[in-house]
Image 1 (cartoon, rainbow, N blue to C red):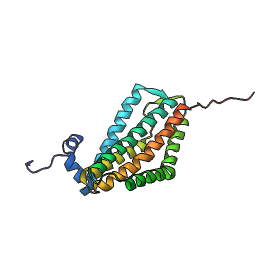
Image 2: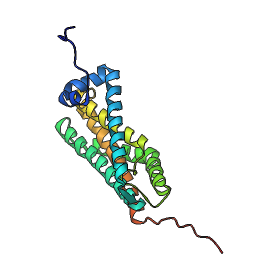
Image 3: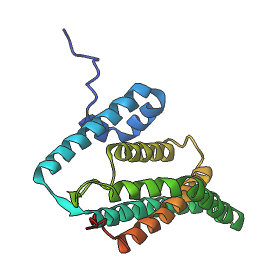
Amino acid sequence: MSSVGRKPPLTICTIKKSKPFLLVHFVLEPKTAIFVLVQIANSLIKQMNILKSLNLTVSKRILLFEAALVWTFAGGMLLFRGSLMLGASSGFTWPKIIGCILGGLLFFILVFSRISRKHIERIENLMGDHHLFYQFFNSRSYLMMVGMITMGVMLRTTLIIPLSSLSLAYITMGIPLLFSSFRFYHNWVYYLPVVNSEVE
């Protein structure tokens, strides 16, 4: 049979080479989005298995510090990109800045405060003293992070949402992420290992 006109199979290589086309496919073809997310998840699992075999372990306190850095980077990137998009679209105004700050603080109090507390409790309650260096997140958190990054790239590239509105969302979401990182830093600085003592 002739292979003329037959589309090549979608792989990670073709995904990297056809990024703009793929981003449109994310909107028009849900199956493509699911396929890509599954491929990314499988790749992460394989890499984690390799790292697990190397036995690169750190203390719980280091896990808290790693988590703080990741949350700081995520919040900082959202604030940075949001500020660039806002400046390039509608420009900075005090009502927008105040609205983003209030919205970000509200998100932190209602949502991210609880999420960051659960992450810290999970790390501190891990069995044993040392753990693999990437265990500051569990599998669910890694998948959620990949999904959020993918959605952010989609929205920014396809312009489904105007940049003037998307920039405000970026800034608003960056603030609670940054505030959550402060909680991780606090627990890293004042971390005290749980010591089980028996009363004689």
